[in-house]
Length: 291
Image (cartoon, rainbow, N blue to C red; front, side, top):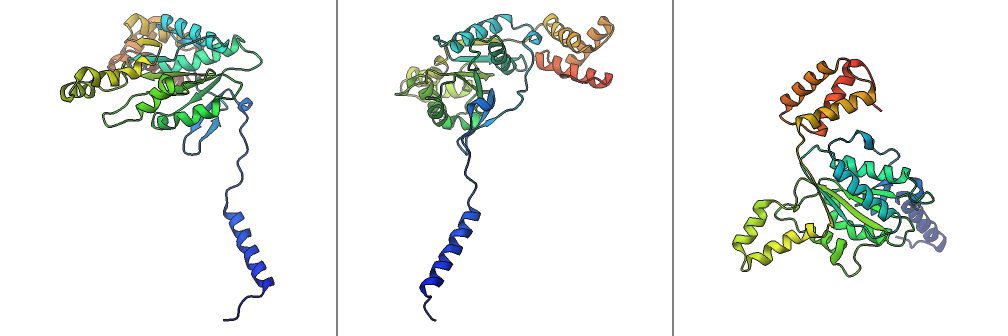
């Protein structure tokens, strides 16, 4: 076989280089934090994806959670002004507006113009991506904005050790939480870990107290614990009537009451989520749009 001449070698190398350029992904443009008020953390790519329109409920429509609402609003307002504020764990009954409250508070604080020149940003991190939280914090640390990092339905299984990454970021790491970041999480569990896991740790450990302390200390990283409990019948109906009034649904109040109670009975639960699902059913029947 004849050796390639210098020009042939150069042409071959150039064709290979051109082919590799075509296979390579286009360069990623740097994301401007100004592009949106809310983002989702894409852990695999270590980048933020803007959310053009956040799926949220108006603050005035969140009923039966006044104390939790006021506490979280005050904490968030202080944070937006650059004052000391606490990480918050919103825990308790399903469907009682925990995640809705976080999103509504973010909008409320921005609308109140606490920092009109630089709106507060909301970043959602998925539960399965908690181990990448230190990478997210590193990206946010030097940014001039202030951020709520939000994780919905946060909990850990018995064989899951990623909770240690969260502990280190919230308080325990050498750098700790950046001053411009606060962490809000929702969970059905007060201590974020299953009770049988904690009891098993206690029964098998040489020092049971220390073993359980390691698990419970995660929730201690949250300065605010806001408990959400199952609503009463009156609170449930108040939610239904509030939604119906806001969207112009229903006619006779007594008929609306009967239908709403029957809806809750068939689902075996009264909650804000159940009330909203009933309103969606009602709006669909009446041919009206929500929002």
